[in-house]
Length: 267
Image 1 (cartoon, helix red, strand yellow):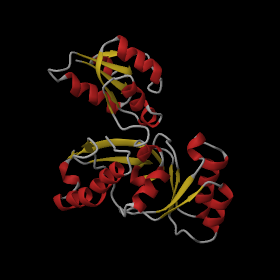
Image 2: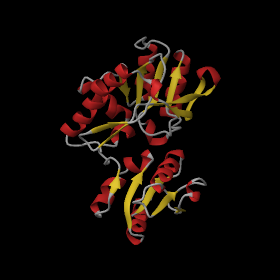
Image 3: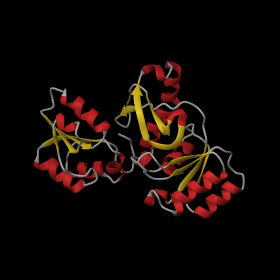
């Protein structure tokens, strides 16, 4: 089988590296790929958001399976379009991808399904957000988030009122993240160690992977602005067996069940 991996980052390099090892995989293509993926297969000069171009390539090249790495093509509906053409593709639909594409969608979903999450409020107007911050509604530090995709950089931990107001101005007035800043979340700051606990799911069954951790802030000591994540590593010791089970029971299973129940299964 010929496989197409959509994307150009380390995540896609890893997918291509592992797929290459499968006896079922005849050839790996990456669009657009990177220098690492070029050593494993063939890079294709197509943007990950060029859905018509990717469909044409998959059809003309006899691609048996497409795996989508980045968020942006999922959010614009690449899976839906591939499926319409009868092409096998791995990834959530446009509706389901809102879990990643809209922080407001996700927070409201979590609240609706009683899934633990930090306290929050949503604003679609900069003046109202600034007034809420000045009113004392939020304790500092507080977290200001652009609603949409921002390559991991749309989250600002604000230590005081001035920093929070500057974050609102950057996101909603200066439009640093474009349309992703049409709405903002102002959210309770949670102190602690970060862990990412990812699972594979077909929309019903859940297969956990090993937990991982990355380092968001740009400087040592967790100082400076957030990046897209640096220095990621993955090891079982990050989560105790009890905590892992608690995450599965209280967060992951209710999310998978809730998405399926509202007719947008996350696959």
